[in-house]
Image 1 (cartoon, rainbow, N blue to C red):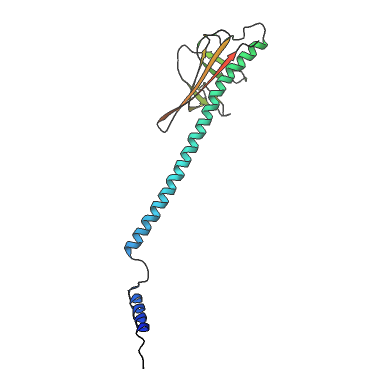
Image 2 (cartoon, rainbow, N blue to C red):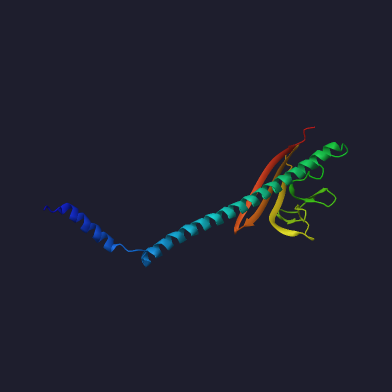
Length: 184
């Protein structure tokens, strides 16, 4: 009778492996697994939070861009209205170099007010989602606007509309410039 030594070795080796195998996890393995899962979840939550913040900043920046553009458009509208009225000069009410604010009145008319000095004028939000400078029954917004008209050159009004706001402790601003000409 021949003894197959190679076959016997394999059987002994397999029995040793199965003897040391345990079912389930040790406490250390469980703690490591929970730590890895926790770090992954915290990373996902931070990414989600940053996405929300970016969206909020983007939304406010879009509002600021529209408010700055609105300031320029109101001055342009005034110039165009002056052209249509042949009795007045093309730059009437906007002919002095200085700072201005524009305000939307209830009767659908824009009011252009010359300011004595440089200042950002706070904007308030009406129920109709219109930003104005009147405080009565309106909500204070985070935005402030100033409009500068430079009338130092003949036949050109250089308009600079700046909107500023503070968000999460940081100052942000949008500046738009345009030149309006007396082309008639």
